[in-house]
Image (tube, rainbow, N blue to C red; front, side, top):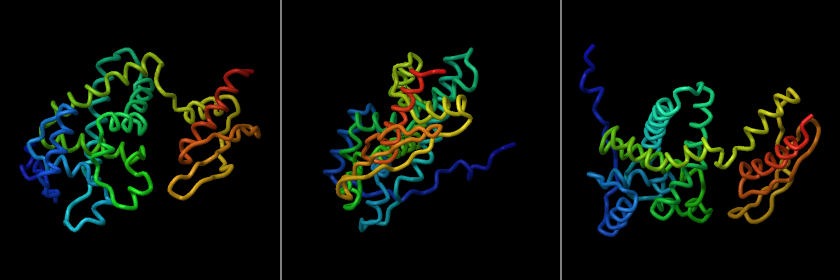
Length: 253
């Protein structure tokens, strides 16, 4: 069946106007990243966080639609690569490797290495709360960048860009040298050993609103482990989970 051409058209995007100074910043960024956009306004749109769009005088889109697209492109590229790289591994193994290399932590680390933290547009409130270095914001911006690059150049170049930055993380996961997701590891061992789930409980939080420190405990089979410390609840839970997981691994029954 022939697909109507209208289905294949890219919908219009309200992209920001690129000033001379911003153009220099974007050219410098893409040189370091190994990219060459035909449309710098599309690249700039990838770095327009919704907090910035809510405050700017321009009627422009935020980067969330590009993020949605980039997330899907990233997923198929990594899945295809793992499918071909590991022909003898079952689906579960492939899924675990993929979940590590496309995780928020992994993408945020790449974003920092590319300097996205210094070039992303954020609103004043987000700036004051340290938004430029938030993992979620960086990870989302990285996915938006992938989405923009895919629209600008097509699938092959997008895949090449993705694998250039993800082959090493994939190899680290396969060699078991990656940063562990201790919440997942703990849940697996608790389900297997106790037929229950870990429960995370806030112990306390300290510091001003823009610079909080969270302390979390985790309860496993009525035993409390922690507290784990972090700049947000998620990272504090990871630290508490690591304490519990390490203890359970050393004390296997």
